[in-house]
Structures are given as structure tokens and as C-alpha cells.
Length: 208
Ligand SMILES: C[S@@+](CC[C@H](N)C(=O)[O-])C[C@H]1O[C@@H](n2cnc3c(N)ncnc32)[C@H](O)[C@@H]1O
Image 1 (cartoon, rainbow, N blue to C red):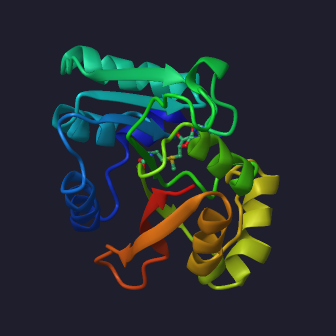
Image 2 (cartoon, rainbow, N blue to C red):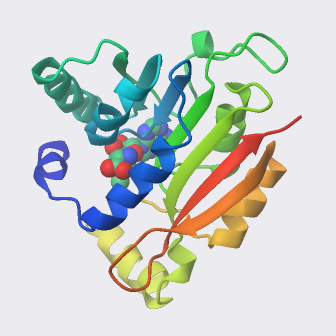
């Protein structure tokens, strides 16, 4: 599905641009950034020039292949795409809490509802960040949809291979999960411009 995903237009362009602007104002030139679940790299290609280094990972080799093709057409020296599972990052990334850490900023757009375990993923991200680092995410809160979607439509679509497994939580549950796993949530926003927006943008700080 990666080629189809890459060809699909962004469904709420104004909302997407608003999110990029909110992320952009919080990035600094000296920073190293990790993006998890980067897909075909559209956002990474937009943001990477603003920072010193930008590593974008995705669990799907096909997504990363397309991202690398785009990068070859539009080279950005600071940007690297790698295949990696956000929930189980390569040991070489994980320097452990209190050690010299690798990233100043972590980003996750439209992916936290797709991982097998939210807690395990947040813990993995937290281990890669020093205290004070920033984690910015935008996440579909499926519990905020009509209940027929998570409990009827999605299971049916999953059964016929048309939808992935999803985690069902609302914005408060996501915020609580972040706070249980070493983050303090500082900003909660919605950027959608097309009616009710279930995708919540959060800025969280890594805390001891
Ligand atoms: C809905 S797409 C979002 C892509 C991109 N972040 C965006 O906003 O357009 C979700 C992406 O997360 C990736 N993904 C799902 N589970 C993942 C995991 N455990 N680790 C890393 N990437 C994952 C998928 O392969 C897919 O590319």
C-alpha cells in the first residue's frame, strides 16, 4: 500500500500546514531530531533543513524506499531515513536514561494509535531523550469517533484486510499515558479545518 499512500493527497492541507508551523516554531538549528513512523518522508523533507540532524524512521521498508527516492530527488544533507520499529528501536540508539542522549526532539505524526503498545512505545521514545527534550505528536484519538467506527466498522475492515489494528484512546487517555511514561504535556491543540478533528497535537517535555 506504500505507493498508493504516497500518491494520496493530504486530506486537510490547511490543518497539515498549521501543524508544520507549530512544530517549526519549536525547532532550533542546533537540534537533532528523531521522527518515528515517518511514512514516505513528506514531513521530514519539509522540516529537516531547520535542524542539525534529522533521522526519520518507519517500520515499513516500502515506505522508507519511497522516502529515500524522494530524498534522492531533493537531497537534504541532514536527513536520513531508516527502517526501524519505534517500539523497539535499535540498541545502538538507546543510550539509556542519564547517559549522553541522542536526540533533542522526537516527533510522531499519525502513528501512536498504530503501534502494538502505547506505553512500550512512549517508554522507548523517552529512553532516547534527555530530560528537557521535546516530544511533539499528532495522533488520531479513535475513541472520539462515533463508537460504531472502532467497535463495528474497523473490526469488519480489519477482517477483510482493509484497516490496520488500532489502539482506541481519547486525548485525555493519551495525555495520561504520556505523563505516566516520563513526559509533561505542555500544549494540546487541534489543527483540523474540516469539522470535528479527532487528531490531537501535543507538545510534551521529557521529565525526570
Ligand atoms: C498513517 S501513516 C503516517 C505517516 C506519516 N507520519 C504521516 O503523518 O503522513 C503511519 C506510519 O507509521 C508506520 N508505523 C506503524 N507502526 C510503526 C512502528 N511500530 N514503528 C515505526 N513506524 C510505524 C507505518 O508504516 C506508516 O508509515
